[in-house]
Image (cartoon, rainbow, N blue to C red; front, side, top):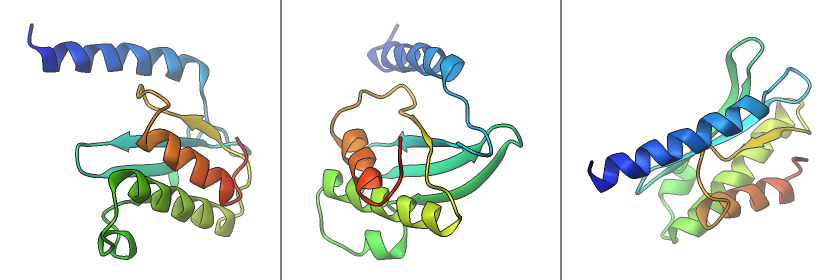
Length: 120
């Protein structure tokens, strides 16, 4: 078994155990994070309807044009997702770290979203 598949299967196990507990409703949707090697994505999902309410990523023009580190980039995405959520009338969410450790870019995004006005 390669290292990549071991890491992937480990993250999927953690992800499934988190998803058993974390569920997004209309009143309190789920803020989920996906990070690749170069980008970071965030979306707020209503799991009852199976619908994405708002989404953003580091590939947006406002963020992609800036020369910043990946942690600072994640913070910009967090601020932007919080602004979009407040604009859509959301204030409280459930945070889904998607199997990633709450560290580095994921933590930076979460803290910036809290500063932007989201409660979780």
